[in-house]
Amino acid sequence: MPRDPVPTAPNLLSLADNPKLPALVKKLPHPVLAKLIGVVGVEDAAPLVAMTTPQQMRALFDDVLWENPSPGLPARFSVGEFLRWLEVLNEESVAFTAERLQTLGEQFLAAALGQILDVHGKDAQFGGQAVLDDRADFGDFLVRTLPGYDDHWDTVRTTLSALHQDNPRFLDRVLRRCTPSWTGFVSERPYALARVDEGGDRDIRREQAGFVSAETASAFLAEARVAPLATLVESDGYDPISARYRARQTLGTEDTDPATTTDAPIDDDLLDLLATLSQVEGIARAPQLLAPSGTRTRTIKTALADLERDRPVEFAARMGELVYLSNVLMAGVSSIKLSEAEAPNVALAICNLAAGQGGPLDDPLTKPAGLIRLFRIGWHTLCRVPPLAARRLVDVLRDPVIRERLGTRAWILSEVDVAIADLVNRVDLGEFDDVVESLGIVSLVVEAEASQWLKALIAELPRVPVPADDTEHIDTRTRDIQNADDLALVERFLARLPEQVKS
Image (cartoon, rainbow, N blue to C red; front, side, top):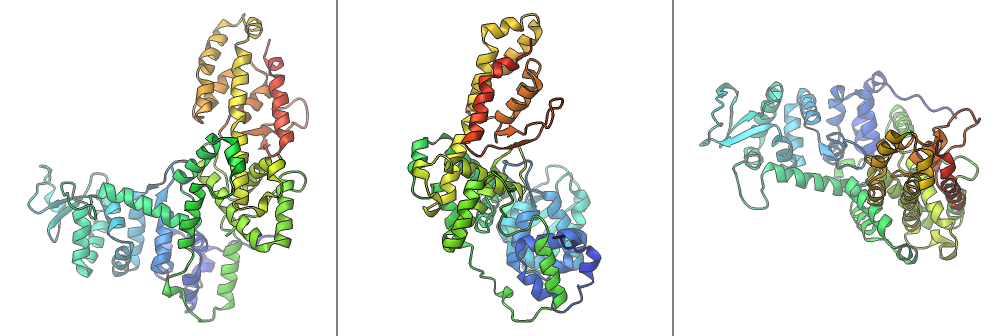
């Protein structure tokens, strides 16, 4: 079925005068609202943001004001995006900006402004840097921008003036937390700690909304990797990390925002807009089971289909677990950026790897923590592949017979010895940052097919290469390891690795 055309900015802006648009905006789930703003553009989004509820704006800022340097690393606050949004909101209404910043709280504002402003009490000096014309007087404090933010001073000063006029005590408390020399009670700490606290609170809010922080994801994956297999198999409930996530999410399921309650009917044009936005790629509320027909994740998919038919309540619980596991992979795997379409299939393949072992895992989806329990077992099994491949590679390249075969190229042997010197230890610890470079050197002494296999296996998320359609080309594509047959493929490749060393 062809996808409905994605709405364009002119189409959306043509609806801006519809008196019922605010009622619709207040009902938009956060992913849909974020997509709507993305289509309109931040610079033109102020009228839409003015229609949001405080809770919607909090969720929006938790998303757009934080950036991930790379998958698997903690998110960090983007000062540039914060200043950009200040400019946009001030153009709509300075009073609205001041009101919404207050709803975001002292901690948020201190964490943001503390990275932009140089704040001192009136009895303090500015370190001899007498840029007197740039100082502004707000109550007991003198304020100016830090170096690098001078171009934004007008925006910041306008915002501070609006806050000072509307609620001077609130601004006084914020600026006090931005004062480097100030020390006080634990409840009002300087901005650096406010930034840490705000980041932690954001993680909690996003977990309540179904997201998973990089720290939580990394801890979950690491625990499953190192836990004894017998412990994982015998577990009959949620692990502590998943249980804590579920508890936080339960706290966040109730809609406590009275502004979203309205019985006003919505025009067909607006309903069409909402339906179109909801179909745009990347904002689905739950992952789809997108694996192609055939054997890929067939066992676990068949079990889920049966569960949906026979036990819909338990099926819904398993789908919630799949959302969690997909988010874990997207947040916790740093070497590859999985999309929202790819992550559920990778998670199902890992679950399938465990379910295929049979025995005590028969009918696993009806047990507590069904998919999460399977995933932990499958992830543990999958994480045994890189060390196995690394040890086999090192053993082969240190074999006297192999070294004699390569003896005429002593300089290459020297480079290879350096590359593999600490390879096993790094892989055992789950450290893959330098592995690609090491395997690049190893590729000098092994055939191209073997090099492709080694790069696929000795990785944070090990996979197997897709067989080439012909013998003249090496296919660089890979696919998930999902069952015992795939593990047998790995063992067969490692067994014939000596044959893949160049003469």
